[in-house]
Length: 78
Image: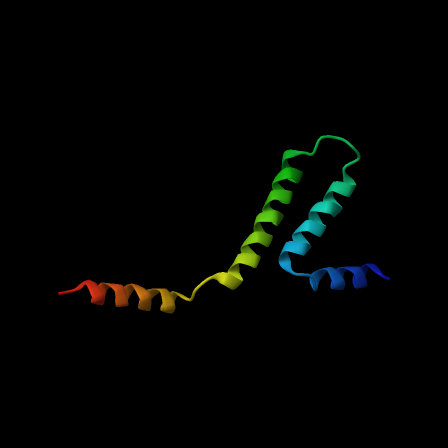
């Protein structure tokens, strides 16, 4: 399997799995030395990006949220 094939397959993974894979690949480059601050931040950013992508499926549309707010406001008005 070529590097391009591996890369294409990795891109097909869900965001959280891509973040985990990126983290593991970066860790494999560390030969036992302490991770640098840059490495640690990159790992954390990838983890958080994966979490955000996964959570995006559960987010409501602004129009739905606004409609619920307006319904509540109208229900409370005299």
